[in-house]
Image (cartoon, rainbow, N blue to C red; front, side, top):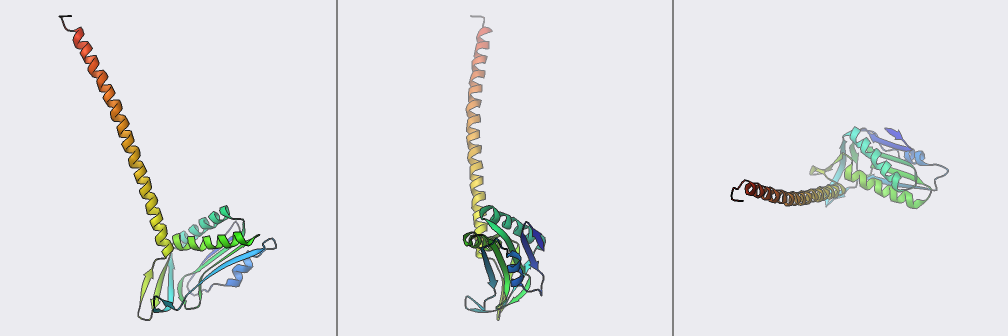
Length: 201
């Protein structure tokens, strides 16, 4: 559990359910005119396959740290009073909550926008992994947000690499120009020296 700057972040160990009332109570405050929430639950089908449960694993220290970063980012963009984020680990049967987010704010717009941002960023960047268990098998799943984030980062790295290549090419061009000028001067000096040493002059 992490509690800092009016944030409550909990990665719940296997066997512990999400206590929705607890998190709503945490973010409630007289100055908050709105509480926005998101509850992610296990559905019973996926692409025509019957789902028995979802299973979650996480690197807890890093997941908690990432969630703290995301909460700080949300606060820098919206006027938020309190944030609560909880995520279960282990098996989560159909109909039960795996992730819950609550945000309190003076006005509903800030709370709603921040709540959407928090769940989107959680899915995209926090090291929590999901396995879907069907009646006829199981498979580890990557969130679409994670794939989009990875593509976005790859594109940024490519843009940075291309920018460095362009700078390198420009730098090489400048050095070659200066080098040729130096060589011209050297040739002229050599001709002058040769002329001075020529007895015919």
